[in-house]
Image 1 (cartoon, rainbow, N blue to C red):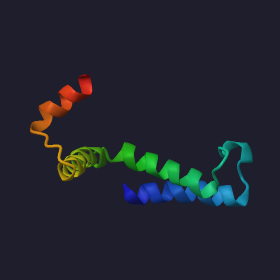
Image 2 (image 1 turned 30 degrees about the horizontal axis):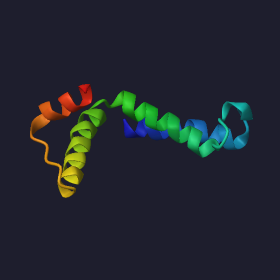
Image 3 (image 1 turned 180 degrees about the vertical axis):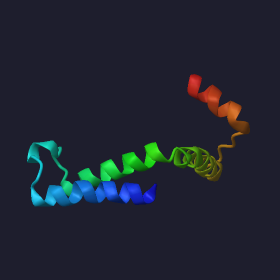
Length: 86
């Protein structure tokens, strides 16, 4: 999957630098590198949903750790779900 994402990046970066596609395809404030990187990240996320399955619990753990360091203790995922609904 990483090789496919890297190939996607190269497939968009090289033609972008060579001017093979119109400049108006690149959003303002971006260059060919960033556009190609967005496509590569999109391929990586879509082709490997396990990345999302690992990123979500990791984000919850990091947020819980930061909250705990600031004095906020969260007991279980139910509290987070209830906080989201309010």
